[in-house]
Image (cartoon, rainbow, N blue to C red; front, side, top):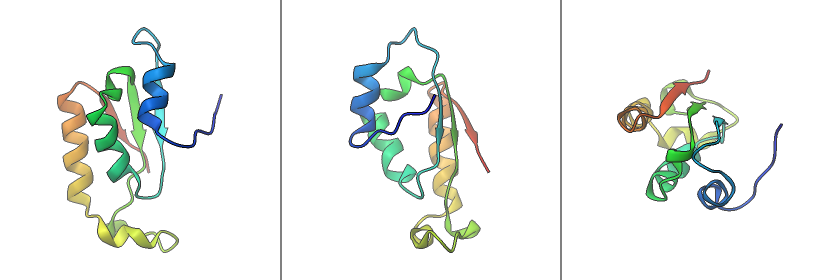
Length: 95
């Protein structure tokens, strides 16, 4: 089932989920992933996520409908994925 959440996703996850829940997340948020993922890391929300699929938006794969992609490079998405994997988060790129 799908639920729309407005506001702080880290707070929502931390208040709603338990570590015993099995959670798979799909993230497609039009360059906001570069701000949301570090925010979730700061608030330890990834301890609640078993698996995450992220659609990255970056300069080298320009999306004309998302002008903000010019501000992000592929290397930044790779860096964030490596960091998540180092924390044992099953992280996948969604295309």
